[in-house]
Length: 355
Image (tube, rainbow, N blue to C red; front, side, top):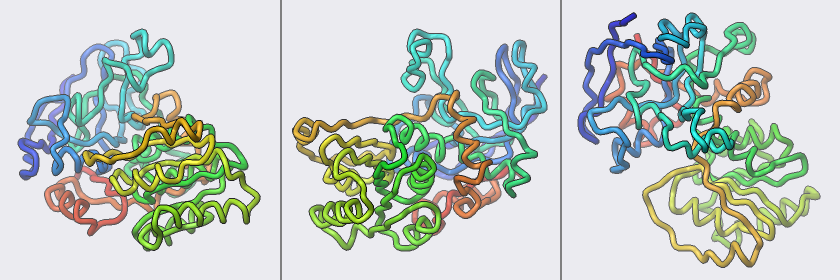
């Protein structure tokens, strides 16, 4: 079955997206998803403005935070037809040695919409049926959410979920989140849901005020502290709340050089530093600090599809709030939305919705 569809392609980085028609036709094991919403991620801005290269050659449709309904399927994927789904931002093949050993994030045959394959700034997308996350629309409605809103689960929520899970956050942990924006704000909420006391650090007072209402026990504006004073403030909070002065779990979500330096400066004995945000900027650090503190640093590339249902449950159970941090815009307005997000004129996570 072939479906007439449209997508907004990046022909050249920094130039206006162009709307083109195409036929969405699934192959064996593939499905066609009629897109309800696709989030605008910091990574998309990196491709568009900062020279970050995509794995697939241009022209390419960006967008990897996708939700929608399956409207067609190829052989072997027919069971998905009619279901509401979230498309994982990184789709591992599920068959290679790495996948079989539980290392899906480094699967060499993985498919990322808007990077390896055509993405979600479109009316429809063709993706592998393997690994889709089914959405119970009845439960969505009960918590006052819509299918477009949960598109951001595909990355902004599941990536920090994977980071928090891998870091070993448990009740009694002290979690420190650098950057309280589109990803970091959810990292704060997830760490709190896992039982941690959470310190949120940012340079935007509005973002700090917002996240103080959704899980941050302490908020600090990094502009008001040098590196030493920032660590002193966090340590004072730990002592006041009976938390350990060791084994802090630090999540760098800002995707900035300054944020990475702040995160590294907060290392304590036994700390875990999780790098969640991405930047093309470089930083200079003394790696021996990891040795001296017996600390560890973890990179985080997406989230295995098997953990998507648990991450979505945090939203459906009311433990993570999405609606206050999401703003919907028409997909037709993409050429106005990108610069507005880039210049921080829109502070919420934008979800683009087809007409």
